[in-house]
Image 1 (cartoon, rainbow, N blue to C red):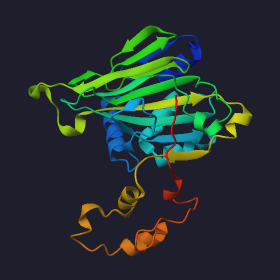
Image 2 (spheres, rainbow, N blue to C red):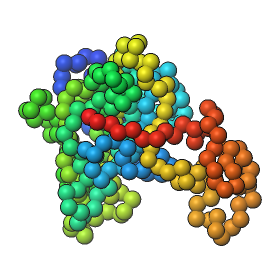
Image 3 (cartoon, helix red, strand yellow):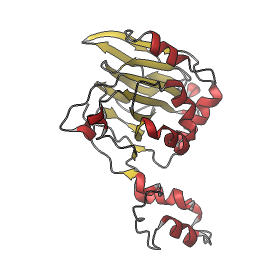
Image 4 (cartoon, rainbow, N blue to C red):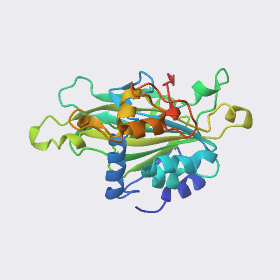
Length: 286
């Protein structure tokens, strides 16, 4: 992976609307990141609002003091965060976003025009500021993808149209309206890739500069996901499809370590339990 070139741009050029850095991260890093996102037990139908059509994801909300914890919980995100987080922001909304490409689906996966302000649900009735900046890393872009472009507007005027490429890093001002055009797989069978690479995967981070009063309303660390508790528990117990064929000798021991009953009853809310940190989704109206 190359160095954190993005941070120096953010310091020198705050008045620019957006910037892009091609091959900011190498292919091997992007491959590991994409795989980690797809295999995450938190990955589920997008927990953002209705503007995010046919997408999957989850979100991590945290303050600056929890940055080491985020990197420990999600080690595949660490290099990205090291590259884009600067000293001026104190709250963050991190969102892996997966758009699954289907050749014959009408419309395609897309994100309608909006302005990011995803911390709003935590600060109501106080309206938070827009993020100071938004950073996007494209971890996986299928070569046969049609559409899926990031379009940026200043007021109602289009000022940028960015075609994603694997490894591309983009930053734009947080007060700018933007959208992702409908993304589809190429309908030519000869150009279709294997199923695991038919997803447009990006890692988005909103960077906020909040005053002390607003910052009190933002959790130090929390994960939002629509992944069901049953799915989460199945991953935690490591049983998967093998449980019907082979009795799990250690299942009872693992259940006790998670505080889960034999009937699958939810664990006790304990600060050290990962299950305790999975929050019910909130509607983000951007």
